[in-house]
Each structure stands twice: as structure tokens, then as C-alpha cells.
Amino acid sequence: MTVIDISPSVMQFLLAFIVVAPLLGALAALLPAPPGLKGKNPDQAVLRHGVTVTGAVLVAAIVLAAGFDHDQPATMQATTDISWIPALDVRIHLGIDGISLPLLVLTALLTFLCALYSYFKLPAGPSPKAFVALVLVLESGTLATFAVLDLLLFFLAFEMVLIPMYFLIARWGGDQRQAAAWKFILYTLLGSVVMLLGLLLIGLKSGTFDMVALATDNGRGLTTSVQVIAVLAIGIGLAVKTPMWPLHSWLPDAHTAAPTVGSVLLAGVLLKMGTYGFVRILLPVAPDGMRTFAPYLAAFAVVGIVYGSLACLALARTGAKGDLKRLIAYSSVGHMGFVLLGIATMTPTGVNGALFANIAHGLITGLLFFLVGAIKDRYGTADLDTLAGATGAALYGRAPRLGALLAFAAVASLGLPGLAGFWGEMLTLFGAYSPAEGLSRPAFRTFMAIGAFGTLLTAAYMLIVVRRVCMGEHAPHSRLSPEEQAPQTTNGPEPSGAAGSQPSGSTGPRTATTPQLADIHPYEAVAWTPLAALTVVAGLWPAVLLGLTDPAVQQLLAGGKS
Image 1: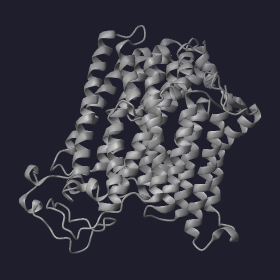
Image 2 (image 1 turned 180 degrees about the horizontal axis):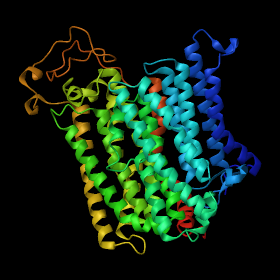
Image 3 (image 1 turned 120 degrees about the vertical axis):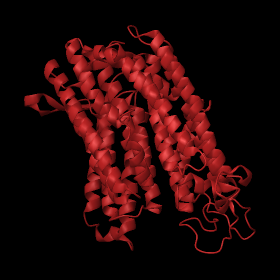
Image 4 (image 1 turned 60 degrees about the vertical axis):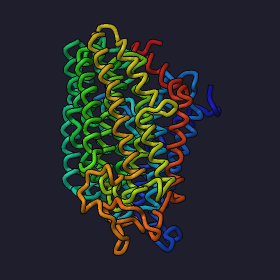
């Protein structure tokens, strides 16, 4: 069943267009604009160009999804297969199935929303031309990662996103941006070198780099020792990008320093590249190697769940001077832990839960980073103690719509039933209760119990954040010093973007002269509403995603056999 009937040749063109158009758009962004398109403000013209290109890619992705045959989601569709390097049998092989299609559409949507947001709120930094070009190159590399079906092309696309993200952090980021950018690039490059060795090992030992042929063979052409070495090498590179504890330490620094749109793209799509590699490559190509490492992967996953939650609790407590962006970054470590736990079960239930949690995390955490960026713009800081002490009423009293949306995103992130965050975590825990044959049930049920405990910790820190940021710190219960608790007047300069806010640390009653903060702007509403709406739709109608992923996962785990 398709929503609209599209010929195979048009589907091929659409997929190729989705991958190539952002690259061509990036090149065009760097060229001088034609006289008729310059307008009065060349900077706005190039930002408008970014919105146009990403919008065209999003439309093409939606049309591609509409033309996708939903009755056969396990079949590769819109395929292109052209010989590229005959000596190595490397081919330009593109295609999508029920696993890659949702990630493709999510990437196109988030990049368009980031481009639209940047048109009205460009981060401080060098030339807008370079900013737009880097975002478009980043989009092209991410989309290619989800569309290519050749191991070497996958590696090239996987690496293509590193340089744009490095410069987005280093040139448009905030405090400590240079150190954070270097940490990001060094961690990911070192992981990628090891991953390339594993990919080459698989290709040379099996005689092909074609991911479809390798998945169909299901590891029968590779010895167990080769599979174990390949999973170890490739898994390290993928685990760094995911990121898996203890290879996660680059993530909080990168998120804290990155501009708002950089954080949205990093959390929303770049982290998904690592988990996608586990599902697309390691599970079907090296099942024996995965079975060997699955208990260790699950153990690291649940440690990451608990560690990320405890780090968030430490940042959220009063007096810790925790940064709200850093807290959301640590929450990603925990959420991606659930994705890895689902993959480690090697069951259709667990892997479907992992893929669902991937999409849910992209929607919810993307929205959270948008909101934190807006709060930082208004208050001039993301320090939790400052946000909680800025006024007795905090966001609910000063920007009620912004506060309500932050509370919505927080309860979605903690896995409230009826919202997208619930289904992925639940299916992952179900998968851990009954793992694949050959895996230890007592061990995985222990991991399930630890993961379930992690959901309670997640609820704890998210509710603390909502109470402090949305409701404010109440003086009788505050642990701030008497000087910080003393009521302050509103005379004097205000923090950037926070007109009328009381000085940091004040918990005294708002005076009649204290004006409201700017609530949600129209351009913010346009950028954020799709994410909030899809979070509700995915939570109430999970079959939309699971109907796509389940047949593809079943076939992938069966080695290409339905």
C-alpha cells in the first residue's frame, strides 16, 4: 500500500536528490548571489537560501515516504546501484526500507526546522554563508549515512559530518567552544579509524562491501573469530558516536558549547548514526560476534542509563550551579543507553524498541534543546540556580507558554504513557526480559531491572527541573546564601534577552514594575510545533512507526529471509 503511486524511477530520483541536493546547496551558498536574489540584506538572503534548500529536501523526503510501499517495508526501495570503484567492487548503492525511512524523514525535518529557526535567530559568529554551507553539508552526510548500502560509502558518509559539526561548535559556539570542538573531533576520529579497520576486514574476508548481500548471507561467509574482531572494531567507532558509557565524555562538553541548532542536530540526528550502524551492519552481518559481545553491550548500556540519570540529579540539585544544556546532554547518555540495551537483546521486540526510542529521542530532545536555547536567550544564562532564583514565579509566571512547553517536553522525556518516549523504553525492557537464544536470561533480566530503576531516576531529575525552572525556588526552602535570597530591585541593566527579569539569585516577590519575559515568538512556535505534535502522534499511534520497522527488523535478524 502506498499513499500515492510513484514510479520506481521517480523514487530513485527522489532518494538521490535528498542525498545530493544539500551538497549542491552548500556550494551555491558559498558562491556570490545573483543580483536579483541579493535583496537588501545579503546575510538574510543566504539564510533564506538555507531554508529553501532544506525545505525542498523535506518535501522530497515526505513525497518519498508517501510513495513508499508500506506493504513491503522489509524490501529495499528506491534503489540505485552503480559501479564506482570496480577494483574493490565498491558501488554507489542507495536504498531505503522500514528501518532507514523514519530516520531519513526525521533528519530532513530537524534540519529544516533548524534552518528556519536560524533565519530569525542566527547564532553569533562568522559569515552566515559559512554557517548555512556547514549545516547543509552536515545534512547531506547524515542523510547519506541512512541511505547508502555499501560499507565504504557508509564510512565516508559517517565521517562527512564530523568537520561541519566541529566548525559549528568551534566558530558559533559559546564558552569553552574550542576545547569542546577538539574533544568532539578527536574522540570521533579515533573511533572512526578503528571502525574502518573492521569494515575493511568484513569486506575483504567476505569478498563484498554490499550491505544487502552481507545481511542476506547473515555471517555464514565469515568465521566466528573474524566476526568477533569486526564487531569489536566497528562497535567501538559506533559506540563513540552513540555515545555509550564510558566513551561519552565528549558529549556534555559539545552540547554545552554548541549553538542551539548545533545541539538540536547533534542530539536529534548525529547520535542516531551510531545506533543505526549497530542495527544495519553488526546485527545481520556478524550475528555470532554480536552474540559474544551482547552481554557486555547491555551492561555498558544500563551503566550509562544510571550514570546519566545520577549526573542529571547532581546537576539539578540546589546550589550545584548546574547548566541546563549540560543536564539535557547527560540525559541523552541515559536515553541512548535504552537504545543500546534494546539492540543488545538481539530480539525483534528489543530492536524495534531501540528504533522507536531513536526517533522519540530525536523529537523530544531536539525540542528540549530548542527550549533551553530560548530560555538562555531570555535570561542570558542556562545556570539552573539562576533560572530557579530569577523570580518566585519563574517561567509559569513570566512566560507561561514557554514554561508549559518545557514541562511537556520534560514529561515526554521521562517516558509518560501516551507520549513518544514511553514505547521505546517499554519495548526495550520487554526485549531484555526475554533475550535472543544463546544469551543469559538471568543477566538480561538483571539489566532490565536496572534499566527500569533508571526510568525512576529520569522521572526524578526531570520533575526537579520542571519544579525549579518553571515554578522557581521558594525562599523558605532555598539553600542559597542570605545575600542571594535578599529581594532585589529591577533597576539597572538586564541579562541579554531577558527584559524585565530580576537579577540572578533573587527569590523575593516580583514587584508590580517587573514586566513579563518574552513568551513564545511566532517563528519559535513554527519551529517547535511539529516536534511537539509528532511526539503526541507517535505516543498515541505507535503503529505508524512499528508497522514500518517490525517487518524489516524481522527479516534483518533472520538473515534476509522473511
